[in-house]
Amino acid sequence: MVAAGLWVRCRWWVCGSEIFKRMETEATENNLYFTFGVIADIQYANIENGFNYAGTRERYYRNSLRLLRGAIKEWNEETTAPKFILQLGDIIDGCNSQLKSSDDALQAVIHEFANCMSPVHHIWGNHEFYNFDRELLLKSALNSKHLGNDRTSDNTDSCSIKTNLGPADPEAFYGYHFSPCPKFRFILTDAYDLSILGRKKTSKKHHDSMQILKSNNENENLNSPIGLAGLNLRFVGFNGGFSQEQLEWLNKVLTFSDNNQEKVTVIGVGLRAVPMECDEEVTDASYTALLYLHCKCWAKYLEYGICANIKNKLVTLLNSALCWLQLIFLAFNVLRSQITHLIPVMLPRYN
View 1 (tube, helix red, strand yellow):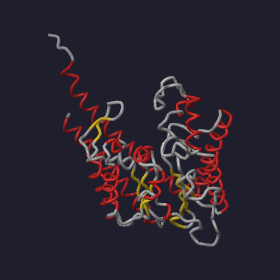
View 2 (cartoon, helix red, strand yellow):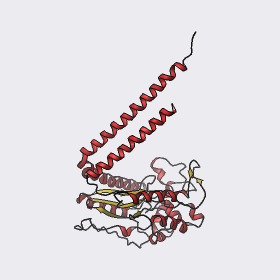
View 3 (tube, helix red, strand yellow):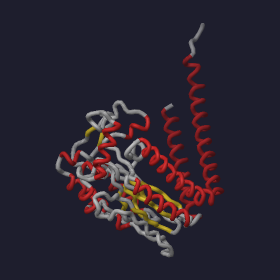
View 4 (cartoon, one colour):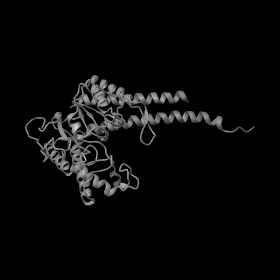
């Protein structure tokens, strides 16, 4: 039975490898535009292993650097070098703040990223704001706005999207967009634009965010979701949201991409729910606005991306489905033979 199980696992691995090899071949035949890498939640700290907040999962703080090092090695050795890397936030753990080691921890991770041959775009998550305020982040290596551009990839149409706030304004948000290849655009958003994290207590957005939280969360500890349900689970201190100004900026960029038939990817830290605003009526409006913008983005991706190559996609999906059906049928036959073999042994004997 053990041998049969191992054989099935090996067969499973071989089938999986065949799928990936087939995908690489199809990508080469279809003139691959570009590739990119993604990594998230490195959460490095120079401390012994610990557990998550709930105490249910072990955390390997130091080992995260080894994993990052391995990822960078893979990216650098790719036959087709990644056009860029997306670092999706929480690059160091929040515990560094209490240990007074935030700068050292960040420097250790940035030192590893220096070995990456592809440019790295950084998103800011809650753990960044546990360690630094926005003013420090803007001056740090985690500010990758210089990698953005305000023109289309062919430099024929201006995509300059201005906001009412300058980059040095304490109320400004951290967001930009770039085009790695003609007809493709990536937009980095600031999911903690409206939050009590990272904002100075004297700022308007910190004041507005605090008012929102206290109006909807009666817990003394604003990070606690006790008593909250449904969409109200968003009203916790470690969460964040999008200001109206950022939503308008995002809409302008998406409209530009829509008019130029670009495939768009919107990137941001995953939050519990949706934008926070000043009252229930405005919250619902912002929630609907954000959903509309995301639907608009995905609709265009479907229209210009998947539908343009729907035949190839269907063929790939069909081949994968057949491969999995073959694997399931194989496993079923192995199990059936084992069960058939065991039944005579398990049945009582009557003399």
